[in-house]
Structures are given as structure tokens and as C-alpha cells.
Amino acid sequence: MASVEIVGLKKLYGNVVALSDITLTIESGAFFTLLGPSGCGKTTLLRTIAGFHFQDAGTIHIDGKSIENAPAHKRGVGMVFQDYAVFPHLSVSDNVAFGLKQRKISAVDIKSRVADVLEAVQLSEFAERMPHELSGGQQQRVGLARAIVINPTVLLMDEPLSNLDAKLRVDLRAELRRIQQDLGMTTVYVTHDQEEALAMSDVVCVLHDGIIQQAASPLELYNQPANKFVASFVGGNNFLKVVLKDAEAYLPSAEASLGPVSATQTPIVAAVRPENISIVLGEEKLKKGNVSVPGAINQISFIGREMEVHATTDTGETLKIIARPDVDVLELKAGARVKFIFAKADVILFEDNENGLRLEDGLRSS
Ligand SMILES: Nc1ncnc2c1ncn2[C@@H]1O[C@H](COP(=O)(O)OP(=O)(O)O)[C@@H](O)[C@H]1O
Ligand SMILES: [Mg+2]
Image (cartoon, rainbow, N blue to C red; front, side, top):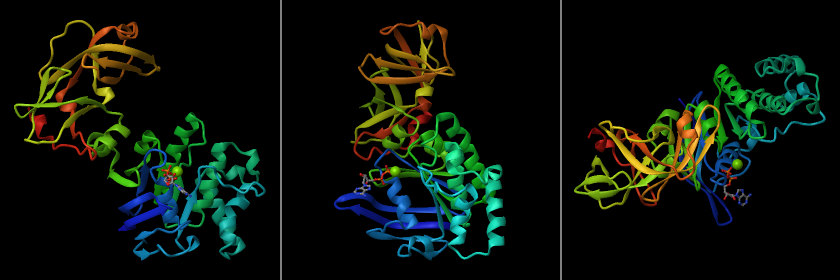
């Protein structure tokens, strides 16, 4: 059953359109992530679901009940904030108990419920500590415990990990996912970090300028981006110019055809991901199905497990390559001439216009 159903949601701030015609369905028990750059409307959408402000148009149903005009505390949602929002003058257990006390629940029940939730977030031994005696990661667990203790129908989280340092962020994202799965709690999660979104989610919904670009599983989003924006934001695709020549998509940078495309008037562009390009020094026989783009190295960064190379093709287009560190490549100086090789099968074609829609995959058979 769908747990959250949003139809035609619109939100304005003055004449700024923060959300424009948002329609989406979140299945019960799903970890659903809103992903997009700063200012795309993520927080606005989350807070509109929470009832912290009201939409200008559209409907929201939670478990089949219309809630778009209900006050926040009647919506059955729990919210976790970026800045933890714990009460500094209350102990961990009093912080967690707070929402239950407001609901007139017996002291015995509160005690056992708080103990259960502290155990779920692994804070049992910190129950009597004050927030200032906790690390950032522990404070955010208190924030999470406070949100889930009321047994919300939907858990909402707005960039809950972004104030934490990198290592802790990675640890805690695995743990958030585990807790969410243990509880089977429908979750709407907001982040601008594509890696976080891909790692945690059942469904990732990419937003841009208040408009949904694509909602799909992490794998589908990565491998089949619906448009140029998604291909750029998720996976960091490179884009190369394509011209049509005798009904074939022709890549000037490689002086090669990518294969036939159906007759179209629209300009098109080729996308290829940084990890799908290899760097070849000297001569090498080109394998069938591959293309070779000549160019020059601009900059190489060795970042341990991988190296990141910035380069320019002879046709003047920029490329980013991510590859396993290769001693011969690492020794190259800026300006060194190499070949960039990738498989035609790894190329995705998009319309090169404002919508930037993906072309059907027909040409890959060649
Ligand atoms: N209270 C507000 N008043 C006016 N404009 C706002 C307000 N809150 C957000 N906005 C604008 O709405 C858009 C979406 O903002 P927001 O939902 O905060 O984006 P995100 O969370 O994705 O960074 C942005 O253009 C932002 O400047
Ligand atoms: Mg935000």
C-alpha cells in the first residue's frame, strides 16, 4: 500500500516557485530520498509534508487519509533536523520522553518505550547524560530517537548527517538504514549528496528547480538517467558533442560513429561516466565496439584508492576520468598526449535542449 501520496503539490514564497506540480507515491516501508542541489525545494517539500507550512495547491494523503490541511501534530509524522534540535537542558531520556509526555501516556509506558527506542539507536548507556556531554553523532541519535518514539507513520529527515564529519557520516548512514529497516518505517530522507542517496535508498527522487526529474531505484537512476540534469548530478557524466551524419550519431572528438539514430531534428549530446573511460598511452589496437578520443592531460589527482584525471580532447571538450591508480599515468605531466577509450555501449544519448531527455537505446546494438 502507498504510505504517502502527493498529487499536484505547489508551493510559492511570494513569487518564487519553490515546488511546481509535485506528484509522487511513496510505498509503505520504503526509504525514499529527495536528492538535488541546494535551493531545489527539498526542505520545502519535506516541511510541507510535515505540516510546518501549507501548500498553495495539491493534496497529500498519508495511509489513505487526506492530511494537507491538518496541523503538524495530527499528521503522524516524526522529523529529524540537520542541527539535531535536541533540548540542551534535558537529559537524553527526558529528550526522548518529551513527545510522549505531551501525549498523556502513563509514566510506566513512557519509561519502557523510551528504553526500547534508546536501545534501537544504541544510546541505552547514555540515557542520563546531558546533550553537551555527547558527540555530534550521538546527539543526532537522540534526534532520531525523539522522532521515532512517537511511532510515526512517516519519518522525515532533513540532511541529518550533514553536520557530521566524513567518517561518522558514512558509519551513521549505514546505521540509519539498519534502524529504518528494523522498524520497517516509511522514511522520506533529504540530501544533496548523491553517494548518500544511492547508498541508503529504495527510491531516489531527483529534484531540480522545484520539479521532479526522475524517481527510480539507485541502480536505475545511475544507469538510466532520464535526462541530462540527472546524468550530470548523479554519476557526474561527461558530455561530448554529437553531430548527425547519414542518420548516424557521429562523435567528432573520436572521429567515429556511435551507430544509427532515428531521424531527428533535435541536437543530441553523448554522455559517458568518468569510471567508464580508460587512459591509454602509446599505440593500442582499438577493440570492436570501443571508440578512441585523442586529447591531453590537464591535471591528475591521486586520491588513494583511485585517481581523478581532468583532460581536454583535441576538439576542445573537457573530460573527467576516474580510474584505479596507474603508475604510468600518474607520472604524466600536464599537456601529455594520450587517448581516452570507452565502449559505445557505455554511451547514453540525450537531446541537447532544455529538457535534455534521454534517447531510446536503439543505437547500442551496433
Ligand atoms: N522562507 C522562505 N522565503 C522565501 N523563499 C524561500 C524560503 N524558504 C525557501 N525559499 C526559496 O525556495 C527555494 C527552495 O528552497 P529549499 O526548499 O530550502 O531548498 P533546498 O532544501 O533544496 O536547499 C529556494 O529558491 C529558496 O531560496
Ligand atoms: Mg534544505
